[in-house]
Image (cartoon, rainbow, N blue to C red; front, side, top):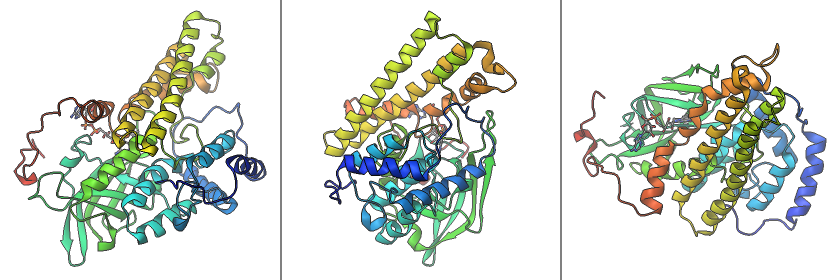
Length: 417
Ligand SMILES: Cc1cc2nc3c(=O)[nH]c(=O)nc-3n(C[C@H](O)[C@H](O)[C@H](O)COP(=O)(O)OP(=O)(O)OC[C@H]3O[C@@H](n4cnc5c(N)ncnc54)[C@H](O)[C@@H]3O)c2cc1C
């Protein structure tokens, strides 16, 4: 976790002032009037993100909350928040935030070996490595512990066979955190192991999936006798559920906006988001009472979201709230994001289908963004699963019925799988 005391004599305000002048001198300013391009092929965005991360590292502003021994600055969250505020309006490597820094590196920091931490966290901070998650499978993602991709021992190493899907940006990555079944005689949560798999490993095929909105950031992977060394194991053999649980905590926290390892703020460039305020301006509907009610609701939700983030993040950092509290952030993020897409399309009206001029602009983006609306309720674990966690682990309500609990995995009836 974040260091408690700053490893610097510099105050947050001094750090902020230094960041302000460094940003002005080193990073390009974003054009405030530029409409984000519609989703499509995005390889150039990843090359650019690596370049920008290398600049941040050279300037001494990368990995602000990661410990110094792993290449970070070892500073408390207040320094990161100050940097993020100052970086608004500049081009930042936003796509590295999730999952590389806030999920994968955060998990390695908690449970990785010393070598894994030094090698991978440091490389990510220097802009040399991108990490992603290989968790969900074609047979389902919510019941993660029920996965069927397996890893069998082979001498000192392991051989992985199976398939994964919905892996965000795997095509651009160097490594994936891959959960696989290593013992089918044990109950489903007990025979799993987490591996750090190089994406160029022989036998690993990564295909990009083109979505209805034109984006190609999702991937599916096929593991055909993929061999990894023993050093690829993250955490304990057959102890992968503990690693996955930590990873899922970081995921909910990151998706919900509570992670200290996120630097910079803004829409992910691979998946541009509609903005109801920009749509209201573009359609000339800012005086319409119905539109004003929707914009008022967005302002209220945004204010509640930032208060909720501050309160829950501080609660988790101080230990007043347990890790399940991150599900509240994750749930609210989905509600906010879906309402934003709904309102943008309502305000755009028919122009959401084609835009107001020769270019689709913000109004056309409202239609495209709406196509991906439901993703906010699935990525990072579904909102239904968040509600289950909040009810069972925070409110103490009865646990969901689980007839497969404690049953050896190979004796569980599993439909056609
Ligand atoms: C934007 C985005 C990014 C993603 N990135 C990644 C990634 O990088 N790596 C990765 O591995 N996966 C990723 N995913 C996949 C994501 O983790 C899964 O979509 C999610 O876990 C749900 O799994 P599923 O789609 O298989 O739905 P299923 O698990 O099949 O569920 C279908 C529906 O049933 C509901 N449901 C299932 N079980 C329960 C239950 N017990 N109680 C109540 N409701 C239930 C679910 O909430 C859902 O609505 C991503 C998905 C999205 C949309």
